[in-house]
Length: 268
Image (cartoon, rainbow, N blue to C red):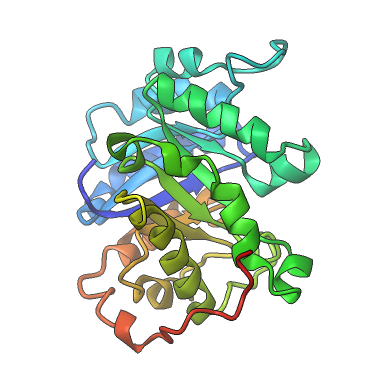
């Protein structure tokens, strides 16, 4: 995919054959809105193959999975391996979403193994990281993010350049409260700074109550490589409007006006 702004649509455990097909067909009919945007469409596993078939031949649309199971972990029943995803034609996979960390009690070592499995099979991981409200109040945001990023810094430059880090503050996901712009900017700079220390570059996107109303402000951050959306991806019209707005020419020209000072958060 070219170096365009990214829009990652995470449909989560939503949809039916009919509704997912309706969304995919709407996207295809309005693909002109993707001229400056790359869309990564992540439906439930059971709809992956259908979506891959629907989007075949459209360079600006790729299909991603919402999770995988690592080859070197005990398990199997009900799980999906990296090999299976590659066999289907999947290119991307979301790993470490806050809902899986909380509900499925996935910890950092488990997530690291999933990342290794994805990279070894040629999948591009979309690693979700973010702090809870309690951690934010304590001023531990950067400390939490540094812990969640640990291990990624050892990836080779060629692998790191394909990584996507999705900053999704847990307190903002599904709350209709987008994180303040200066905080988002500071976190993006922090994440990218971690990789620059080892001469590696990564793509960073933001997620957490992203909507058409706050998108232009988010896109004013030049360091931001895109967004990951949940609820808005369940409507083809809303999703494509987000894609259109993400590609508006000049949307990144105001980054210098955003507070550049790093948030006062503990890293150690």
